[in-house]
Length: 123
Image (cartoon, rainbow, N blue to C red; front, side):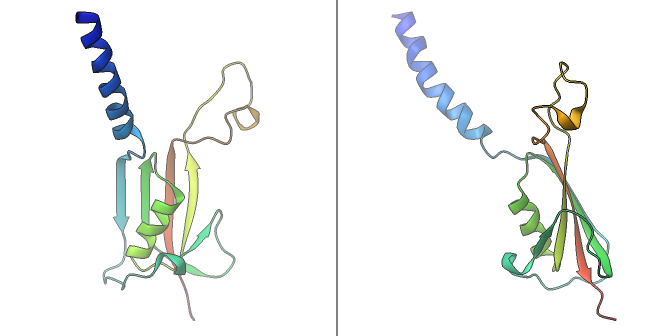
C-alpha cells in the first residue's frame, strides 16, 4: 500500500515540479538611465543585435537575467522605448575535459543574458 502511494506521489510531483522549472527566470535586474520616460514600442520595432552598431546611439537601459530568452530581453527593450537591444550571453557550462571554454561542446550554451537597450542618435 505504501509503495503504491509513493508511486502515485511521484506521478503527480514530477510533472508539477517540471512545470515550475520550465521557463522560470530568476535573478533579474534592470537599470534605466534616462530622466524622462520614452513611450513603449512594439516588440517588432526593436532590432536585436549581437554587437554594438556602427551608427551613433545612446544607452537607455541595461538588463540582466538568469535563464532568460532573447525574446524576453527584446520585450524589456520595447517596454522602455528602445530602437534596438544588444544581447550578450554570459555564464554557462564548462567541460573540465576540454581545455578551452570557447571550443568545448558546451560553448553554445549560456545561463545568463545581459542586454543593453539603445536609441539611435538622430543628429
